[in-house]
Length: 361
Ligand SMILES: [Zn+2]
Image (cartoon, rainbow, N blue to C red; front, side, top):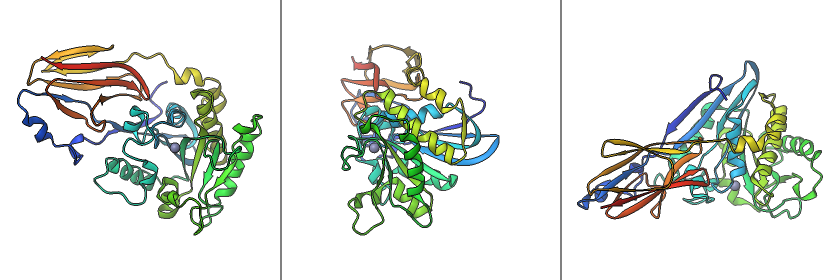
């Protein structure tokens, strides 16, 4: 779809340089080594403004890297046109964990919104999101997740529910909002375990069973910014990725109705075309500079380079989820020096497309 009606900023983040556990000097110290560089992982941010005035909704995806229903649903909405209202989307908050397909490659990011050491590898991302929300001051923050199990079958499980931190917080009627969405979504769901009830973790109460939620994004938004924030959970145990995305879109449709945001194409179209939207025909490649010479790599390949070479991946081409990570060393690194060999996995989000094996010799 065309880009003219959306403003998009993709900001580079985290040179591995800033990570304290990696010393570039050390890496260069060994004579004859080969330096491999990857482009920084971007923090993706989309802002779409409608012509008509309406609500302002901010969607966060990918705080947990192994929850593709969540970040794919957020990603799909980046490509719509907004007719009424305003949409802000940060689809891939934890890109390194998405590429690693792990909940939190550097620990659980949803426990990092209270206190966090600047030494934490997720520090820049968490601070960026906090600032983003504070600058935008949306009417609501919706954070998307794929939880475990089915909440309607077992209330200890987090899959298929709408999570709120309290019934009412400083006049914000979270319970009412969540129940409106739950009621409307459930009208169309006949399978009992797929129903989406409201889960109140009572995070503000002294006797809450979930004090850990005081470190979460939604609690941060409520407590520190007085901004309504709700967590939408589909289930990891849904039969496939399409179903997870569909349920996220169904919940989001109700929130959009409530906040007076309309999009084009509408949710009905998005839901019936999820398959096509999830798996577009794409050509994947990496543009690589080897000692000043540019080459294009689009399938698994071994690159033999002489000692003291520099191999720099200038960019990965494909979808917005396409990027690369090192295989076998810390995946936070965006630069690494080798004496023998190292491979780069080129992925579209969790899916591996090909790998580039670099061998010194
Ligand atoms: Zn999650």
